[in-house]
Figure 1 (cartoon, rainbow, N blue to C red):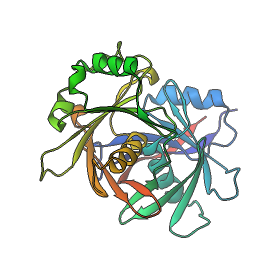
Figure 2: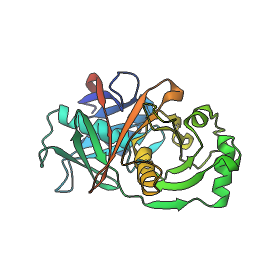
Figure 3: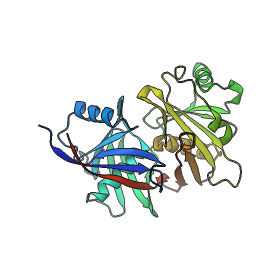
Figure 4: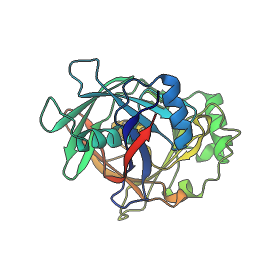
Length: 279
């Protein structure tokens, strides 16, 4: 029988309500079937919906399952920050002060306080390096750009199979009008640098039409992969801010900080809806 479960909806990667990426979180997810979770995620029609569950690993504080309208993800960034925020706000206990350990399909992900924000440790890349020539050609066609405009086309896969294309400028990134039919099979992030002195150092866009999300407003997993690649290649400093969602009327900000032990992907979380859902 359906029962009432605690539910919140938060806005992630923004301090201004309605300017980030919304996330639905079912706090009491235990007992729901995979079909139940998938059906609710289709119903919310958000880029992601998460379900908090008791952990099965001793080091974890909670376990999360992450669903898009079209399927489940092994890891995602804005659901990690939003789920950690919901877990803490709902009275969840942590094993280590100042840190939350999330269990998801890729393993354990650390989340910590970074001033007023939460930040997660970027997972290691499962696949890196240049994409093949056929995929590069498909990327160019799907973005409607000449291949010569693609400064780099690389794998930045930390679970969701992201690829990245780097263009010459943030302005060029914002001008893109993709061909989503040509993008079939790709999970594609695009990045370009802003001019010196701009509030953000990079502009990012994320396209995932196969998951029912032609363009994701603000994407933590992609930005985590981009950070490891850009910093490792000497294309970004240890600390920088990326903007995402501008093309959709949002104003997401991703705060990246490389430290000795990890690269941290931080963002603000704003709670918008508190209540119960009958599932």
